[in-house]
Length: 490
Image 1 (cartoon, rainbow, N blue to C red):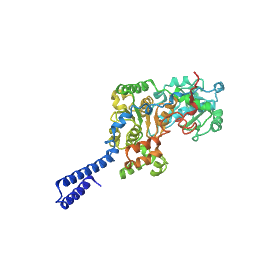
Image 2: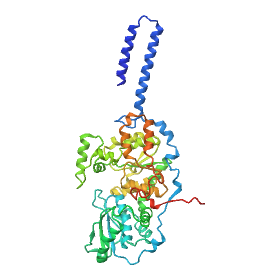
Image 3: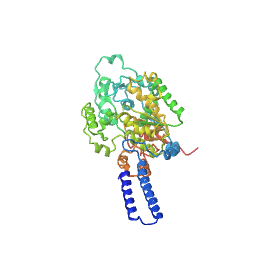
Image 4: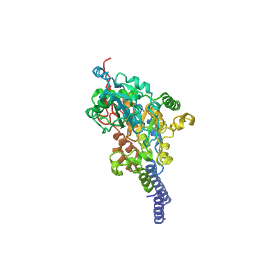
C-alpha cells in the first residue's frame, strides 16, 4: 500500500477520534496526536527501510547499503584464499614420456584452429598434443579468418612464435611453414569428431599420414577428449601456461593498463562481462525486454545455420544464462566488495548499452575499461583486430587480484584454469543454477538474508584449491593433473 494512502487513512481516523473525544482533557488530545505521529513515523520507517534493502527495479544499485560493504571490502579472505600457498602448478611429464619421442616423423600435421581467441587457443594446445600422439611434425597452426569475429590475424601477430617452438622442442617438432614440395598440392583433410580419444586419432589419421606424409585438420577445437593420460595432460599445461606467450606489443599494452590501475589503487577486480547481443542470441536466454528483445534475438539467430531452438526458461534453470551487469554487481556487493572497489571490465558491445551498465557503475563507480585507461593512439595498432584486443583484456584479467565472470565461456574457462595453475588466485564463477532463483526473489527479503544465501550458494565457486574434484569439468578450467600439493617437509 503506498505511503500517501496510509497517511490519508490515518489522518481520517485521527479526525474521527477527535470528534468523538471533544470533551476530554487537553492532555488526552496531546496523547492522541503524539501516538498518531509515532505510528506514522514507524510506518514510514518500515516501508522506506524495505525500499533501501535493494535498488529500485529500474534504477539498480542506487540505494544499496554502501557503508557495510565498504567496511568488509578490506577483508583478506575475499581477496585471497587461505590455502592457496599449499599448491603449485606442475607440468613436467615423466622422464619415460620424454624419452619415448621418436626422431622419425610420421609426416606433417597442418591444423586450422577455429573460433575466437580462446577457442583457437584450445585448438593450438590440442594440436601440439595430437602431433605428439601421432609422432608428427606440427606446422605452426593457422588461425580462423572466416568466422563471426572476422579477424585476419596470424599466429605470429598474437603469440610469440619462436618462444612457442623453442619451449616445446623436447616434446614435439614444430616448423613455421610447410615444405615447398607440399605447398601447391591439395592436402588430404580429415574431419575429427569432438572429444575423440587418443586411439581414435591414431586410427583416423595415421593411415593417411603414412600414405601422403601430410594431413590437414580443419575447424580444430575441442577435438581431443577432455580426459587423457597424465603425461598428455601435463603437455597440455606446458603448452597453455608456458609455451603460449603473447607478442611483446600485446604484453606491453596489457601491462601498461595493469600499472595504471595499480597507480590508482593497490587492488582491483577484473570482470569478463559477456552480455553482447550475439552471446544472448546464441544462449537463447530472455531478460524481460519484451517484443524488442524477442525480435532482436530472432534476427541475430538467423546468422547461424543449424542453431538449436532453446527454451529460455530451461536455459536459465540449467544455469546457461549469463548474469546481467546488475546481477554481477549485486553478487559482488553481497560477497563483501564495497563501492570503493576498483573494477576493470573486459567486454564487447553490451546489449542495452549504457542503460544496462548503469546499475553496475552505480554500485562500483571506480569503473574502468581498456578504452578509459588508454589513448586512441595507444590502442590504434590493435583496434581493427578483435583477437588482439581480447588478448590485451586477457593480460589485465590474468594479473588481477580477483577475476570474476558472468558466464562459462572459453575465456572464463581458460583464465580460471590459468589462475589455479599459478597460485589459485581468487576467481569467482557464479553458481548460476542457484543464483537464478535468488535474484528472482530478492525483493522479498532483506539484504542481510540475500547476502547470507548468496555466500552459501557461492561456496565451491570462489577459486579455492580442491573446490572441484580432480577430473571434473573442462580440463582447461580445472587442470587437476597439473596441480601439485607442497610437501610439509622443510
